[in-house]
Image (cartoon, rainbow, N blue to C red; front, top):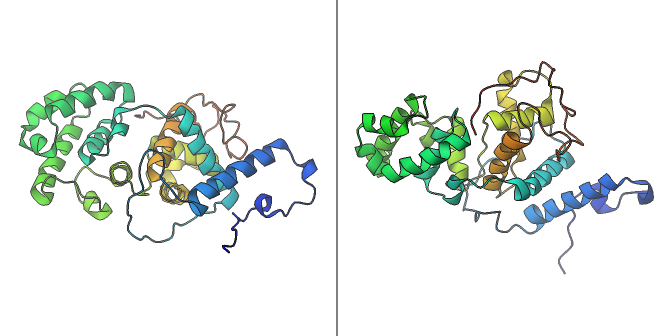
Length: 292
């Protein structure tokens, strides 16, 4: 007979002396943790809107000071929040690496509502790497207008030319190869790997930085803590659920844990968020121009 397994928490193993005195929130957390453990450890299955791909063997994720129960709560609550509040965006209806790349470049320093119509127009004009590479850069920049930051269409065109020349028009999924392209940094490489190739790759944009720093760190300047924030982003991804988890992180930062006036009272993380309740007058409340 197969031996039953436990997620290891005190709630699950029964190491509780007097359950009658425990608060309601305790049992809510218990259900969330156990459900998450069943979904991700005991019975791994299809993840959200993507089927898990065959990923390469990677080193164990570093867990930079994360308490396991806190990690489980954050994962379960974020994914549950995303099921209800996730945004319906056109680039989430495709796994085409070219489409994902175009959307990610457009979203740099540009709001979603401005990107959506231009995304459709750009793909209608240049539907593939080959057609973008064949187009004059001047035409590409005209199509890009008025998104601004005109170095972006130039870099996108350069990436298309290199993809056609070196990879036959197929963007690679390897992290090092992606980072070798001029115009693809660590965030964009992670987004491509996660959203186009369904890998558990970490991402760190303005929204994700804000969420992770507020919930898990609170102290110090996020700009000087990028190394730890990258470690947090990677360590928090539930195995096989990088696509949904990363999309959820960005949506949560864009619509709930916002730079100005975050929805702290409705936040599912408030019971363990290190910045709750958020003080807009605090030195940590730095507002920056951002996309998404």
